[in-house]
Length: 303
Image 1 (spheres, rainbow, N blue to C red):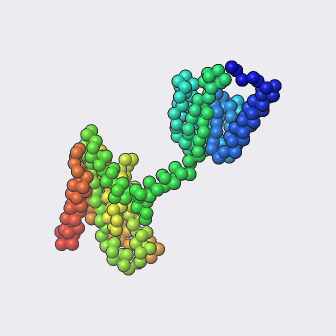
Image 2: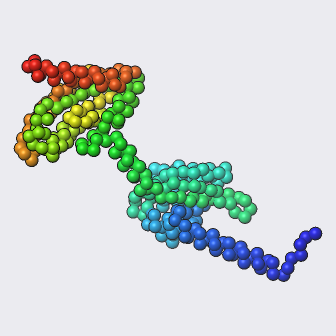
């Protein structure tokens, strides 16, 4: 038999519903998560305080406006619109990570858990996005990745980055060749001993800059350590490899200005041209042997 309804039951349920709605509003207002509800037509229906703090927008300024004009990055607006429309149509809204605009035109990186919002009749009417601002975290991750691939003194690529780039270049079956220049400075130890490590470090940075001036887009300049530098020339033929080698030889022979006056170094520059499928270490070793032959010849008075 149905349970008899006490006169106050309906009122109690109404009070509980109001209390529940108020609690939900308080949670959304107090959570550090970024909460944005987007209607099926793209209008912003909810914009919580955490999202105000992250983006600089006030809820009163954006409620009712198009999400695609306020928060979506312009070149991703069409994708954002497609995401919302698909979510409403299919009833599913998978997690995402992407950039949202702030009010000053900058971007914030946001990691999102999304869900479809339904009305009392179960009809999908929008998407609720609950996110975490991961901008600083992603910047730190990018900084650490960059540090892992960079020489801390010169800012050039390190051996790890060089080998990875060379492996990619040697996998290119359409490339005419992959050129490698192996540069070992002459008289660097003497300059370092005479003028000190600060001048030595300054010289190494200048060497890196001169080699960088010879590089075109796609080339990689790396410092392997000490006074050894490598220039990687993807999609290069023998003619360009020879031309860049001569240019490097001339550039590194010019005097260097330092706090202790002019210093002359010079360099021995070896070259090797790898083909599709060649082993990275084999090509690097070939350039190293060529460089060593040049240096030995100079010491013997043959160059």
